[in-house]
Image (cartoon, rainbow, N blue to C red):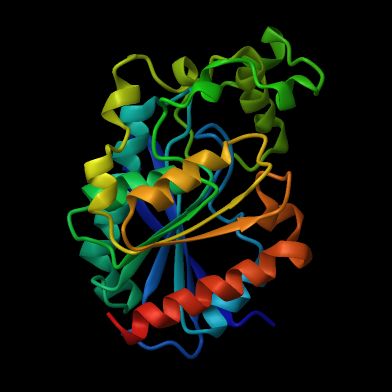
Length: 289
């Protein structure tokens, strides 16, 4: 049996798409326990909020931490400004409604994400109306001005080429806030093969600068827990190393792996150990708020 109780929470309708959250409450957690606001990965194109493996949900909720996994709008049906607006709405909903609807302290929260979700967590830690207690950014990035994002990726080119026809068949006519189908991954694969991921998620070239974090903003971030694989073929590990360099109170864990989302594909080898370290970091933060 899982250590948590879970329920779906309607958040808001944004651009015609319903945003929901899944709230995982620690059975032994009180109203004063911290809540992790979690954003999934998927290159801002695919993925769903309930992708965090149960073993990690068990570990977090066993140790008294609630998790609220949030939807956000996906590209290319929605572009970066709308995606960022949907993330902001989710955070604002938590701050305004969590005391009454979830019975938790809205001031005690962390922003957590994996890959693209880590990017969203980092960006909104700077822009949130109430400063989070910390940020958990697993194999993420803080800027879209990363050279490897704008050229054909050698790793993704090793897969069969995704056709333009296949790409078009996977794009919806309506805004999407969740994409549980594995097929949708092909859209991300296609744009990384072509080297046009950035224009796929944004109509305005200025967005890459608008939605990047400067050194001064990184320096002002709350305490941050960072992790990445040294051989990450998707998001270069230098992004996490630079985050560690510029965030004064940060802890970086590097894993000797060539898997991007190693905590999904290598749970026993690396994942559980990493989440034990995360919980130790959270416990230290809880005892020294």
